[in-house]
Image 1 (cartoon, helix red, strand yellow):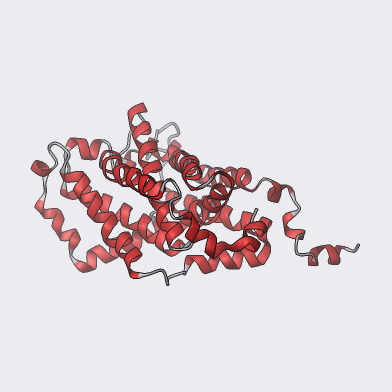
Image 2 (cartoon, one colour):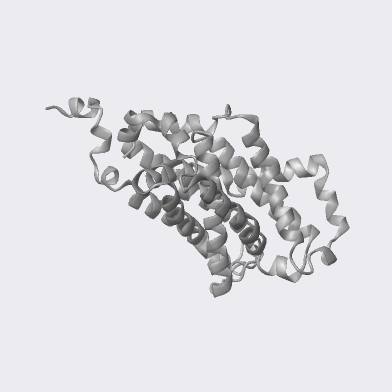
Length: 306
């Protein structure tokens, strides 16, 4: 058989080493791509100060690292396992917008509302309220912050990887609940180098790390439920992620209580999203709406993306 004939075979893109171990190589590339870019920032005077250098260009390390990690890894591994057709499907899911109004309300209103409720129940939070932070809630500043967070703060660079590539395969192998319990810690620990950057405002203590992992797992379960019910819409996943990050930034200005700022988003998100995650697991009996995603995926696509 000639080389051209092999290239034309439908299964040709799925016969290599990467295709035989897609999840393993996805996570290796996602971690390596981001961590290698972040290391100069972490080691610089803006981070641990282990190396005596500083540069304004280091500010770009975080967003660049995101796109060099989970984003790039998602497209490389999708191409390796599903070929050009798979890359096209991944791109279409990023702009999959016909999912029903209620899921936009969940992403853009439900996520912030739950975060606010989770913050105000914390001891000392209401007493620390800073009214001047309300200026950030004006329409133009709020929209500007949301858009900047969406594009350079993580959501658009991360979600094609975590939810676009990893989650469907983890669900297929282990089910939606166990798959989410695997993805949550891996997603959390991917952030690890940034904990040593003071601007991140999240000291890498054992308690912080434990709370962060619990928070990530809780939010992952909620996101899996929404992802499945929107038939794999990465647009909604990106909006949920951006909504979470934007709300966190605003609340840290409005409620700078020691408990809130000291533990970042972990305490309120463990409270709020942890409760919702448990509720969703109970109400769906751990299925997290997976049957809706399976209807969209179909047996042919499931086989192609293994």
